[in-house]
Length: 389
Image (tube, rainbow, N blue to C red; front, side, top):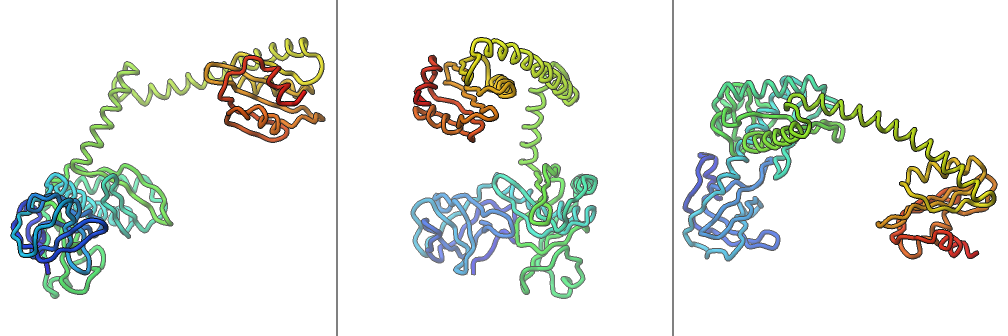
């Protein structure tokens, strides 16, 4: 059995050990040591990285064979003495986010009546799945406030193997997953949980705990949070984005929401004006098209965008005429096809013929649209060729 040095000291960064065996993990070589400060992935916490005898340790996993130190390089011989060094910045964050998870899980149970079912402390996201659906925002805010009050209280954190008698007296937040050698992590007198992971020494080392998202997940609620260095990075990134917006709006950061609301109102008003102008323009163009093409389908290449073409097409079909319209530009040719009531035109089939040279789009017999990859300058000739007329 490998002696787990991190159980006694989560802050141990270097250690000496003897190689007990050579193993394999997936496509890499791994070694088993007689003692280690490397934490193997378990309980939602990722495995440690670092170096072992100068060789990079890219992962630490636990199997039936023992704790595997997965190497990116040649393994030392069995019996060799090696020095291990933990990637401390990574471990430090893992300790903080694991402690933050315990703290927030306890707060969610206390303030939101939401017991933790599982947690995942990944490389990109920290999540807790709790057995309660649709948690009110007020309950989540109360849990977050409680967690941060306990951070401010600078509570001591203790990890130990209590005697059976002592264990029986503890009010554990959840049942242990093992029957023997049960290790308990206590956050002051607030939270007692069975756990084999690494943790901070005091709650103040978390800095702050922040819930960043929550969503329904398999009948439960998945809570996403940040803490410590990851929390600071998230806060600083959001602050930077907010300050950039404030500069763009020529206002203070606190005034950005009001500036965004004004921009939204102005954009809505502009959209309404644009729609009205587009409608008036479409009617004028339709009048000219009907005068120039008094019979049959209206075939025309027009300036404008797809929305204007659709508006013109709708007016033409209302007048009982098929609309075969395009708007060429340097990026290709936008196409809109509308069939009038009683017409035999198959818009979907016509689009397929037009797009034989390349294009994206489609439609039905009564309507089709898309974008040809090439610019079409002689639209009437292109339509006649596609229709075989």
